Image (tube, rainbow, N blue to C red; front, top):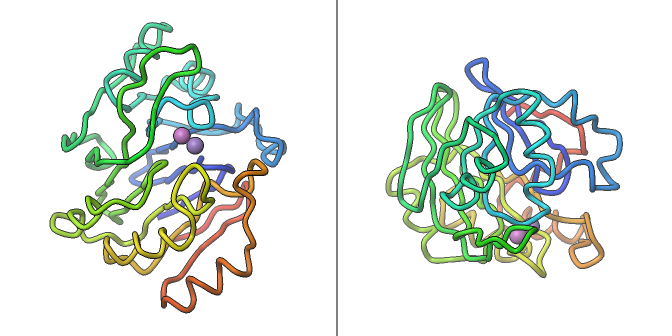
Length: 226
Ligand code: NI
Ligand code: MN
């Protein structure tokens, strides 16, 4: 499965001929200035929660591509009110089969207010099962015992986990999360974008190595095969 990193917590997977984009925050991200959002393909946009650093480019990309927005009820309806017709609401514990695979909404410990002050519901993580691979995207979250439930119903091939600390799990908790979900391949996201979440790459890589877990940190704009 091809995964492309667009900076911060934004990435896309390509599977079964479909492009599934997560948490697009590109145009406000100085580190992602070389990414042209008009060239980012999307058939689906999965949105973990309502914060600006996860939704900034949802509207523009959805309008251009007609991609379906999948998020919690409050966030997806907020986009619906902006005139975006293709939305699908999910809530925690629920799953839905789409033409690229099945998405299950799982718990995330965070907050979710929308930029205009609207209520953004509760934040989500996603377990995505496709014909190729099954993966978990944590969204913005603390480490939570709920993660231990995931291997009971899904064998996770790789996980996309926040590692930047301050607003979310730091690398130490991300390592514990990887153990809970029984996954040895992690793509790190939600780091370096702002001063609060700048990390020491070598220190983080060493900690993952010591734990026997592979940490992938693709460059912004880079695609990797998983
Ligand atoms: Ni957030
Ligand atoms: Mn965030």
